[in-house]
Image 1 (tube, rainbow, N blue to C red):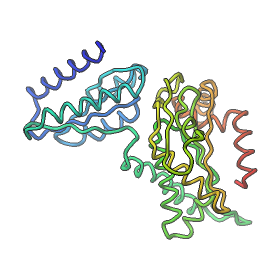
Image 2 (image 1 turned 180 degrees about the horizontal axis):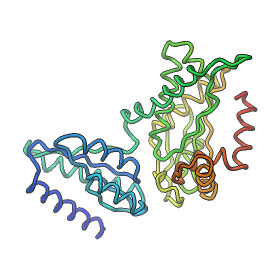
Image 3 (image 1 turned 60 degrees about the vertical axis):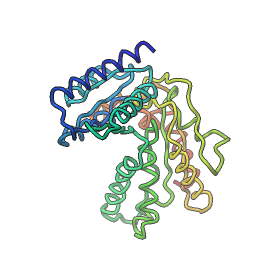
Image 4 (image 1 turned 90 degrees about the vertical axis):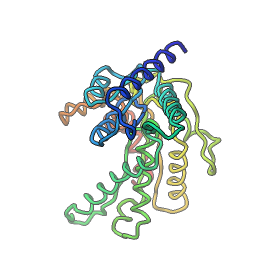
Length: 313
C-alpha cells in the first residue's frame, strides 16, 4: 500500500510538472500496462502522434533493458507490482483519476490502452492469418499436386490477444466468400502454447465448468514462470469463447478444426530459444520459446505430431 501511495504521488507530481512545462489544453495522455512488448508498441505509435504523451506501468519482473528502451522512446515508465495484473490495476486507477479531474471539461484527458483485451488489437493480430493464406496461395503448384492448407498454427498465449486475432483471421478467411482462401484455413488446428506457472489459458480452457455457453475463466494465484511476458493471471473471456467456437466447428463438421492446449516447462521454453537462435541466428525471449517448444522439445514434438496425424493433419 505504501508503495502504491508513493507511485501515485510520483505520477501526480510528474503530471503536474508536465502540465506546467509543456502541456496544452488539448494534450492527451495514453496510459497502458505491459510486461514490456505491448508498452513498446504503444510508445512507438504515440510518439508519432502530435499532442500525445504515453505512460506505461510495468511490473517488477520487467527487465531493466525493456524499461530503459521504453524511456528512450519517450514513455513515462512506472515500475509497480509483483505481476502484470497489479501494474494494470494502477494504470486503470490513474485513468479514472484523470477522468474525475477533467470533469469540468478543461485540460487534457487520459485514455487506457489494454495490452491484449481490445477488439481493435485482435483485428490487427488477425491479419497474420491473411498474410499466411496469401503466401500459401502464391506458392508454386507441385507435382503431384498437394492441397495448400494450414495444418496448425502455434501461438504463445499471455492474456489472449494474439490468439483472439488468430481465431478471427481464420473465421474471416473461412467465411469470407473466397473458396480458395476458405480451403486453406479449413481444418486448421490452433495450438495455444504456455509455460508452467503462467498457463492461464490452459486453466480456463480445460475448466470443465466453461461448457459450451457463456465462457468462464480461471484466475491463477500468481505467476511463477520465467516467461514473464505471458504473466496475465487471467485471460480475456473472449479467447475462451472463440476457442470453443473453433473447436465446436470442427466437432460439428468433418474438416478437423481443433484447439490444443500445450504447456511446457521453463527449461523447454529456454531450450527452444537456444536451438532457434542456433538455427536462425535470432534470439527470442522465453515467452516466444513457449510456442517453439512443441517443435524443439522431443517430448512435445512427439505429442504434437501424434495428435496431428491422428486427426488427419
